[in-house]
Image (cartoon, rainbow, N blue to C red; front, side, top):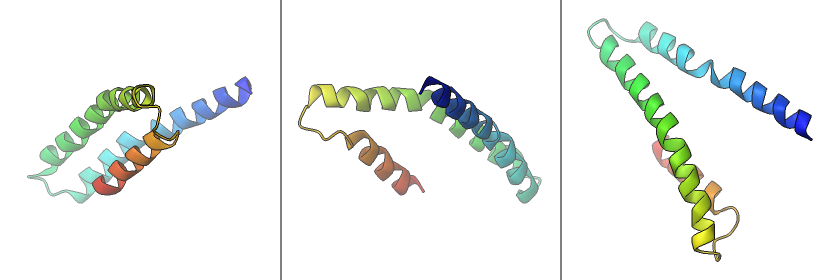
Length: 88
């Protein structure tokens, strides 16, 4: 239902908004003074890169089904899950 969709999107937004501050706080607690700024810059730039590249990759994967109808419906999930496993 539409109400469940809005509630789930709201919950996802609340949970996602805590990721960057918590990761930055953890990183600043665990880093030494001389590399702290560099580590925080890496976290910030990689987060922004993910926010910018995510919709682009999602759109590309969604259009891949239109280009090649032989792809299964789960192909975008499989591709992203494989990428996440390699990165992790």
